[in-house]
Image (cartoon, rainbow, N blue to C red):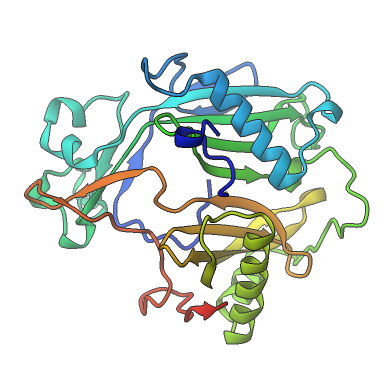
Length: 323
């Protein structure tokens, strides 16, 4: 049975995603902890929606399951949960009053920025941004812990985990773990694989071969089966991105994202940190919160998935590896 789906059962860095246009999401500043929280402060999403408290519990349970989070051992941690409204970029672009509002997602055309204007109309958007996906609302949460980094002399809070929960179905949409801020000593794990600097990591990622693709694809498919992430059987997988992230002790480490697909078409993206240890740091259920998609004329069509597998324009143009 698929894990962490409420709904019918009552249950940052997607790397490699092709994003032709981008959204500036509503955010609130949390001065007490010196950081920015995604979403808006809101306690209820509607009479039939999953409550904030339910989402909080689901998110924390999922973090414990996937990343081994032991909240009984975390001192001084804080959980913030905020509301991310439905995102309909097509409606934003056809409604000037909405498109110019600072508390809504604002879709922009990057090609217009040099001219000093960002907000575009439907007619001004390039063809490659269609169809436009319409996303359901979600609860977005973060878990912060006191930081002892030397770069934080004032003792600020740092994010250790993030999670996102669909407000309609209660399904887990995404989970993220930041080893760089993990205060827990995890025995039996190689904690640091410092590759020197970000450019060295990028050069390594860009030079990955089909052998790397086979290695990571098999690792991701095995993990998906062990964690029972799909209702159907795992079908195939492939690398679709790479880059770097901070590791423990401020080490500069490789991260690689892999798309895994099951026989019924559902896909997810798993991101691993550390070239050798391949520590799971991000789980993203691709398309789980997409409601539908719209063509330029507003007609409904099939959603578009942000998956670069086999895309000749992608730096990570690898073929699927079958199970």
